[in-house]
Length: 597
Image (cartoon, rainbow, N blue to C red; front, top):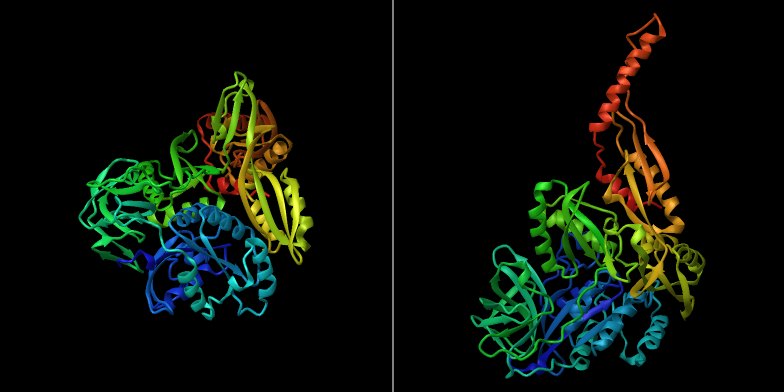
């Protein structure tokens, strides 16, 4: 297509489960891009289908003949809605000029809707508000319209009512995309400049780079250069993304497509980098999006120590497809060699673990997740600690700061009491509360991130019967009284089970951990002492009783000293066994610690 005026790049943003992917199906069907054979055609990962969530952004090109009889090329990027995948959304937004803001007619505006919307407004995207699921019996389109008008400040006429299920309103959406979203700004004659917004690994073709052409043209067979790494390659194949990849002679200015250049090394492609041509390179890189900051850290270790190198290769390939994953090597006494991985949240951590298992057949153990702390020593130096075992000695520490988040929770007024109690129990402080509309209220809290990492989201969903929506961003680091809790088995610390926790709940937490471990650690031939210690002080203890053979069974009658002699002999054996015997901590124990309530 020669005319850049007939290209529209847009994404769909919404809260989780507001019907983005179903609406995308209807758009694809209407433009006759594909036959819809099953729901959510763009969610192609098994995991996405099973859980009914979008994990990856998906780009696809549609052709649409508008009412003015012109043919338009529409590039759609379907994005995830869960707070843990907001990085995917930020990258998709960087590659678009407009966004469909989808709001569920039965649930109204929720927390994630607002945060994704602000992200789009920061990038100056044209917003088209859509109310979805209006065919539902419990839909309340008028109230939701009020909320949207209040949120964006648009006119009521701008809001499109639609249904992803019946296909109502889809024509209006397509016309609005053509009329209201601006075409890409770019100079076809300038040096080539393409923004990489995603990449995938294919074992036959190497790394496939998905990019948006900001300026210029990249032709097949041309030499291209990656700006940040300075590496040069030949573009063996370029093309656009339909349901499959469709090769083309060239990628023109404003188009969204892919480049395959046979790159094998995962570290050479950085999402957010700029691709340009070698013969006529551009002067500077495109202003990309900010580096991702992981929030939750956990150790990932192979169950079989010989799989360490395979795990590294798997993580590198996974990182291509999920740029928000970070990892660095670490070792642990209990688990051997592994990696300290950074995730955006707990769901993200769970998904990464599942994908390692399904896509790469890696069996891994994940340690207790924790957040990063700033530790100040008495000389005033500061050190970031992601792992409790990396803490310096307590005598050297002046104070520790932990990250606080600013959380926004939107819920109906019936659940304000229990939700407030939950947040205050987690050492939260209420900033303010605003009534959104009718009986819905938005609560703002400062909360320590460390308290949220383990089970906050699940508890919030269960006490609000699934109606509270939760969104957060990092606010600041604050000084905090934290204690390092160690778990000792027969006097030996298990570094993978140590945690940093607030002094006020350290003793109770240690006691619960000891009780839980007592249930899970199998009995041995000798007693196992499970102890929780803060510094040098033991705060809780449980004992796993030994399995004993009754050595006095064959000794009947006679003097009691005969029995005692046999028992003494057994005791010596037990003592020797205790010196050489080691205690296996099952994987269930690591997982159970996460689910302590």
